[in-house]
Image 1 (cartoon, rainbow over the protein chains, first blue to last red):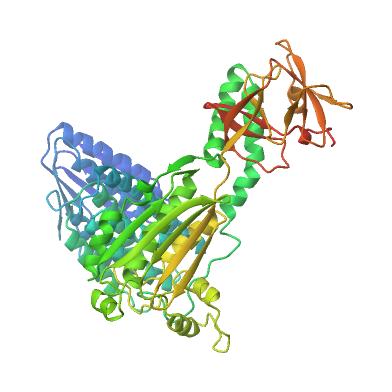
Image 2 (image 1 turned 180 degrees about the horizontal axis):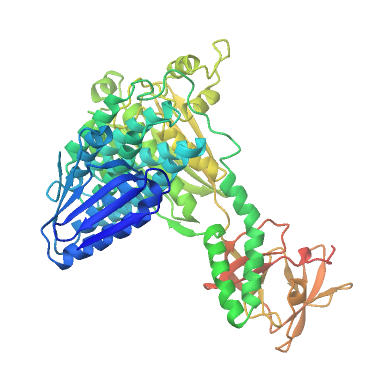
Length: 123
Length: 486
């Protein structure tokens, strides 16, 4: 099953989040500006609950087509990590990044520092 | 160094509040370039850094230090930083919040990331800005809180009266508004004890040892009833002034011995209430302030003219300016010129002052004076017909044992703006403030009570909200009731 979240465009280009439940891959595409943070936070909550319920061991967050991540969205991502930290059933989060996008190359590896045992960054 | 768990928990709770404030100020300053927000960020991070070191959370201290570097760069660029930089600041704040909640994470890796971000950005502006004068605070903005509180006090009292005299659903609806106003402008009482200001005492020795010094710390602090704002300002003052004394004031043992002093320096912290003020002194027997150096730096930053005669009081003022430091490099203890500014700003916000006396070779005494509002009120409480809450007369009013020659009869319920129900039997009692004599209908003989001020108002206002044994009520100034003329 694929859950598709389409956040109405606030800026151009719009932002799309696709969650493939079977493959356990969450794709973030476009520009996640701060206007999308609330919706994105809700999506992270839903995905976290689903993964916990199913006792999943891993999820891939595919950010290769993510052009921009606003600070409010980054906070939602970190909030997800924090939630995972205190969860009974913990799973690994693999951030798939695109090194050709400068901010991804320089910034996303730091996200793994929050908990290297659970969050990894792959290029 | 082992601090009681209670103190560490207190730090964690307060630190998370600071993080939230820094995040809000960071968002604000990026869009508005507000100088207040910029200063708030620097002060809060610096205080967080100092406190974290004092409770032994060195990872938090380290990341705060790197974050200060980032903020210095951002400020030097007028906060016109790119998205990557913005994201890194946000992540650093979240990382610190995580470390405050629990140890863990890859601290070394994260610090390396912050250093890489710093390296990628221009070095101009890194560290304490040296190319221009320190950021100056707009004097008008520092008292906004006190000003707003003063303006909102009477409105909050009106809201209380509306709520207290309402019934049914209307009362329930007004309760929320009153409580919101009360929480915003009301006095939050706090009991200041020596233990609260001495909570970092075990860490001071460790800080001194890290700096190759020996320090003995003495506390002589009297217990006092203050407001939570005063308590917070005093805690900030002790933190920064003691750290400054250890880092800048006390000399290394060899230097002290050579100067004929004992190897261990002394820092004495004294606090007490005197004439309506809380007076905090942090005195060290160190080297004293080198005013020649301060003056030279002030001239370099164009804060004073080379031809201006040296005025030590003015130089103390310069020392406490945001961003001013005689150090050319910031260490993880001091050198950014933020600590003294944080102390002075929190004092000024409460209508207080920060001053210093120094004697070269003998030491420095910093003094913080904070007005402490009189919270206790002892006077006559009356039960007014139609009113269900206690009313206490302003202490300038006393009870007369006989009817005066030309009394003025006042219906308090009507005078305060609501209709009396006359639901209880009343007896007329006579009161005077020396200029005016009035008669008030009371449901029983007035009695002396101890009340606490909750929402203070200026003496020109007709009433303020007090509590009597935790029950909310009004302190009334009858001479201010419309139509009553002395």
